[in-house]
Every structure is written in structure tokens, then in C-alpha cells.
Image (cartoon, rainbow, N blue to C red; front, side):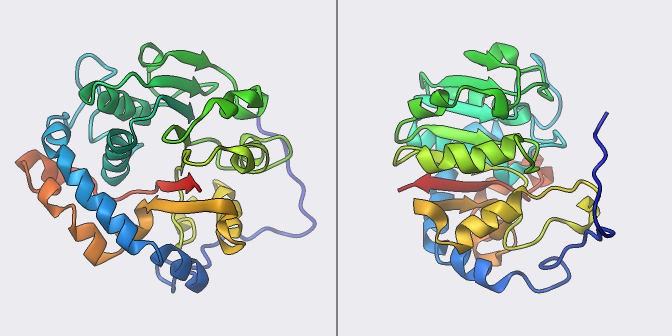
Length: 270
């Protein structure tokens, strides 16, 4: 059972920027500065068109294979994860929060014939992915020995899809304050369910997510030595950038029904 939280006055969650309102202006400027970098990556993703169009739309057998219509991990995010693994060829892939993303990661590793080690940190993964992973840690990130993250080297990936809530001793708090600042140069980090420069969707007001506000403060404060690699939501809402992937979405008739939205936010330590 979730604990009760007492506030001094009524809380009124609402989306303050984006969607039907203007996006956050300064965050837009910061993210938009990297648009040439995003365009170059999008063009690189087209290299994997044959492999990506071979992925099934619906549930397949065996159940650990990725599918496009999975409700949790939309098309743009899946393409980005697959392509970034293909480009950077990580030795280690540490995932905080596992499920459909794990399936796409494993598919990319297999297709590119990599020897990437997958570590899954999740007390209750959404999909049966244990057999895809090399190391299983069935607890929250706040309980993990932080020396694990010191093993990440340039080109390795930390994929974060956690509780999305920062409280005392929560996974988000530990990741933002005790993991990010100490990562080695060249390590890639992905946060999921990040809509910047938009706020969270209005339909999510009862989820009480706050992770992206910490990330927004991080960006507004100078990015802490990180470079933005790929912001899915920003790309989704930018007509010129999103059009770069049109050859993929139209390569096969089946791809036309794949959701083209995304909420992954990729960074790389400089």
C-alpha cells in the first residue's frame, strides 16, 4: 500500500507548458541547439531499415522477441535504442526498469553480433525478460551497490525507466544525485517518459511524476557536463526532424501502423 502524503495546502497538478500551451522557451532553446546532431543520428538510423522492418507488429513466439505494438515502448524510442546500440556498440548495457525496451536492446545486440552484457535492475519487470539478461538485480536502484555504475565505459549505456518520482531514498533521487555526476566520459544515458520542452501530459496529473523537472533543472543549470544526444519528444514534434525517418515508416506496409511518437531523452557524458 502506498503511504499517505500530507501537504500544507491542496495540490493542483497541471501541465504548465506545451501541448495546448507554448513550450518552455529556454528549454526549447537548449534542446534545439543540438538539432543538427539529432538530424545526423536520424539519418544513421535509416541504416537499420531492413532489420527494423523485420520485427513483428504483434505478439510473437518466443515471447522475448520485440514487437512494435506493445503499449509501453513506442516506435521512435525503439528505433533510437536499436540504432544507438548499433552505432556505439556498448560492452555493457545497464537497464533500470526492464520490459519491452530490453527486448529491443537484445534484438539490436543479436543483429549486430555484439557481446554486450545486459544488466537488469528492476524489482518487478513488466515483461518476461530474465532469459535475455546476463545479470539480474531484482530490487530498486536505490538498493544497488553504486560501484556497479563505475564499470560503465565510453560507449556503454545506462538506460533509466524507473519510478519517475524523486523522494527521499527513491531510485530517481539516487540516480540523479549519486550516479549521473560520477559517470565516465562517453557513457550514454537514456531517461524514459521525458517530454521536454513539453510538460507531462495533462492525462498524467494523477501519476505525480517529477523526474523530468529534475532533468529540466539539470539542463537549465548547464547540463552538468552532458551533451544531448537524442530527445524523442522534441523530434516527434519537429516536422523537419521527424520527416527524416519517413523512409523507414514507409519501407513496408506494416510499418505504417507503428506509433511514431517517443519519450526517450538521451544524453552523453562529455
